[in-house]
Length: 438
Ligand code: ADP
Ligand code: ASP
Ligand code: MG
Image 1: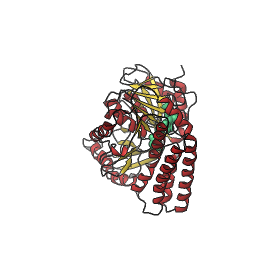
Image 2: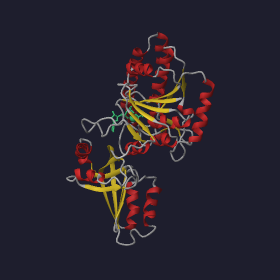
Image 3: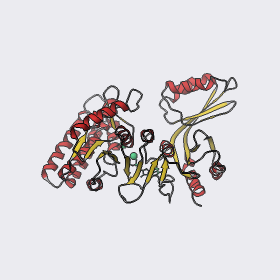
């Protein structure tokens, strides 16, 4: 069985849904994971924002606008009044549900329930379309099998057992449709795998069923060698190793959710990144194969805060770093980069929720300096230390850009540099010019 995930743009209109239906038509059995139609999750986030602020009139207006968009799409999607009416009923029930929160108390639980509606709508609409076209399609509710534990990690054995349980009675189906992004948490409440999490859903499902292949269909022909939103003339990379892809995804290549490579890597399932708008393009194949002696790509992760702790006494004495890390651990705040010297240690974080409390606690160790608006630029490839000269090329082309931190040697695949956000675009372009254009 294969897992095919289609992102928001790929299912962003009736026309696109029809194209996806044509694309998935072959002899292979498959689970199709869908995102919400593009723009929907952003709208739902905006609606939830209004409800938090008790701006009920604005929320109601946004809900009505979004509902109209869906009502217009279904007229274009279905050929028969039967399915138009079924879909109208579906849309009404989801939007009535969203509207029910306008008069209620609004907390993070209600927000998550609202955010789940986008994927529930797109999958049901697509499933109806397949049924209307005579396909043997089965809708698998992700909320019946996708679960995270109390640390927010996928509950792999629960997912495996329950996915098998919901698939078992529908053995003769050709295609299973399910929602990306949404799940339940350890308390059984509706939750999600964070923005962009449908890629992660696909990878978790692929691992759970030991899929032959996981395909991530999006609006670009695979992983490019630099961020196409900031650099011109980037090109698709035909092959990446799991480790390279994981570094790129974690460090900002938006095409993949940050943690989506791991389940595939642990189960050695190839991941193919493909373009829905250009299905014949080869895209990128991610597998255990590591291409030697080449720099593969550059990515950048925004919204980084650097924290430097300077201490005259006992810095780098054994146990010191543990005490520092324990503070971050107690606030469940992951550290991305670290660099140390005899008199200080710098770390970076991207979750600022507990920044003030963390700084207060760190002050017991010495002077604490904080730099916000930082960006991690990450260069990924075969960067083992025997490949002399590669890191030099990276640093040399950034010689006119202030570099706040450098991290190399943590893995064989990555060198990361921390720079000001204002230098990001220039840095990405300099790296492209110097690493790929000869
Ligand atoms: P989907 O909605 O299908 O999940 P996303 O918008 O999440 O799609 O991801 C695809 C987008 O990722 C592309 O349109 C592109 O702008 C962006 N992107 C950022 N970095 C890269 C990269 N290195 N390679 C390819 N795409 C990238
Ligand atoms: N719909 C969700 C989002 O926009 C998940 C996804 O598209 O991957 O973040
Ligand atoms: Mg995405």
